[in-house]
Length: 408
Ligand SMILES: Nc1ncnc2c1ncn2[C@@H]1O[C@H](COP(=O)(O)OP(=O)(O)OP(=O)(O)O)[C@@H](O)[C@H]1O
Image (cartoon, rainbow, N blue to C red; front, side, top):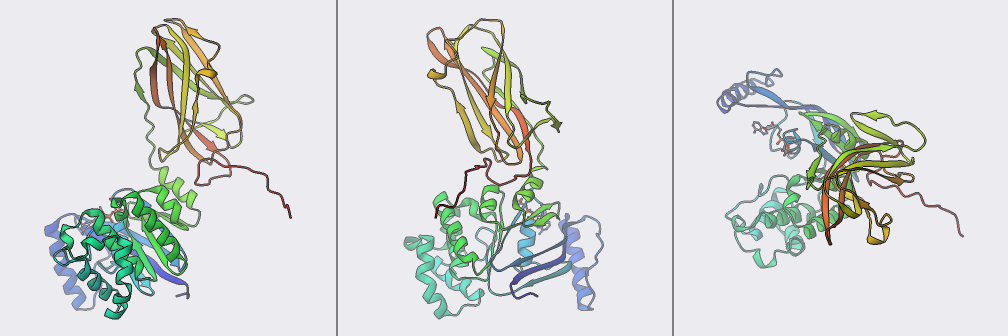
């Protein structure tokens, strides 16, 4: 194995059985076969399925591999294989150096022992001597911010406290390999930020594998990505935005929600390009990067509405509201009065859409003066979807294009 490659996974498969009774029965058979030096069957028996199938990748020192995929895709199974908690049915795993792992919440802790005792236990499992752990002890407790509770049994810790202790042990022991499962999700934001900063520091000398459903967290850390689907890796590579696109392409749901649609009805909403016709894919209008668009919409007023104002919010696939248009009283379209029972068409011109490749939605709200006071007329969540195409597929939704010049 290359010097810097700390994790090498080659053609790894793992099967599980859906029936407990059969799995015990198969287990007995497999143990008997292994006594006679035979491998377990590489065929699926009744009720068995591949939780992982032929997975291969390498992670070097200084790299962080993000593992993403839907629920049940096989991510935790892979981490358990890497941590030696279970064995693969096929393929090989090579790991070099000390492994720090935070896999299941509370796993690796003895619940009736105190935080202090668990630090010594876990440190010993990682291969550290008592003197090594003595030296690191204060740092671990300080990182976890558990000074007050370090002598309390771990079974009385909250979920967040267990994660704090687990991450502090795994990371402060300066492992060569750090395996982190979704568990960080239960830490509060302050602690999660601290964990990411710590992982940034460790990354120089460590190979990190991070499993998460939080794509912003993965995008923040990962230098390469592995996308799982039903136990198979659909993408392994260093093009993180590309991997994220592949992951998102599995979730096609386009749902529009209407709120307060009685006072005025959105009859139609569409996008036009001022200069050419629009192509479409999967029902999304295609907007080439850098092009200008007109957002048009037609509403029917069911009441007389004066001085309408619109609010537009742009969302990316993560449901991040990354841009908005807030019309204020000073933007009023010449004291417009919309008569009851009529159709009214509006257009909003956007020059040069510089969004990264991907699918975006627009939420549209309208307010207006009814009698004497301004009221929300309607709000339509994800009123329209569109897809930006082009070369640029960064993780951030908006691409800035400043001028660079040499000044000295
Ligand atoms: N010990 C086990 N016995 C039987 N099936 C198992 C066992 N452990 C995991 N599985 C199954 O293996 C598949 C993969 O599970 P795994 O926990 O690896 O998924 P995951 O990608 O981590 O999912 P999630 O995002 O929900 O955490 C699932 O179908 C799960 O039910």
